[in-house]
Amino acid sequence: MKNTIATFQEMKNKGEKITMLTAYDYSTAKLMDECGIDGILIGDSLGMVMMGYEDTLPVTMEDMIHHTACVARGAKNALIVGDMPFMSYQTGVRDAVMNAGRLIKEGHANCVKLEGGAAVTEQIKAITAASIPVMAHIGMTPQSVNAFGGFKVQGKNDDTAKKVLEDAYAVQEAGAFAVTLECVPAKLAELISGKLNIPTIGIGAGKGCDGQVLVYQDALAIFSDFKPKFVKQFADVGAVMRKGINDYIKETREGSFPAEEHTFKIDDDVIEKLY
Image 1 (cartoon, one colour):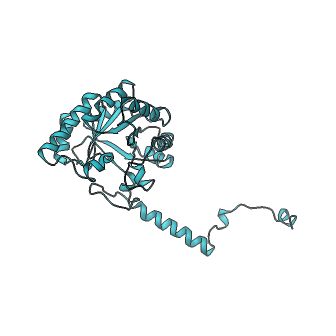
Image 2 (spheres, one colour):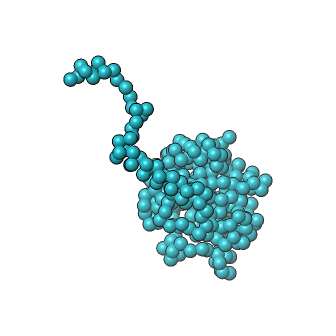
Image 3 (cartoon, one colour):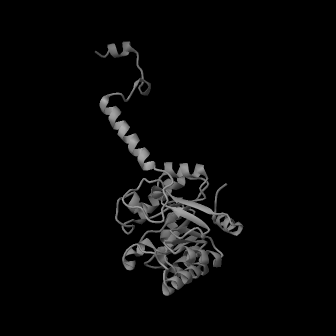
């Protein structure tokens, strides 16, 4: 059955953990969906893991719509969460609603995600008023990397911990159906998860959240530029891919591929008439 925002809320109410991964293409999304993943995030992380940028800031609406539509065609049961890229909603309520609408209409997302707490509550209210569900994202928000002075854990002292908690309450009050907590101390994330009525999805926020999300290239050891502290590599798919590619190169160069079973036949008399 198709997962919806109601599914996520029901899972929180029952104490069932929500599973999410990122995906950016049809084949990967289809595979994840067949495994029974609850939700798929088309994150603006694609800027780094798919496009080779140093951060997420260059990603455009067109990039997000393209990749979200690819995922939506592959995943029929997972909740499809489309990320709103940098400057697609910070410029005002109208832009936020219009761009969220594009992710739904053109990208076929089921909901959108945007970064920020109290500062973006007006955008969250307006988007939800347009019947578009919103997942909020607080703590370490990668689009604010320049303001933070790098990718840093948020909420480690009195003032910042209070701000993360206040942001969590603010986005819930604004109408978000869930909130991602990124790079937040585990005890703080657990506290927030217990206080909120809506589900929390953690990434680098400990096991006390209602669910977890990871960038799939991190989780499967495909992206090798760096490895965040919070990532567990569940399989070394990168090593399998490298072996397969090296074997292909070797067999092609030595002439053992393609073998007879990989080729199509034609009658000899047809060939002879061509000479």
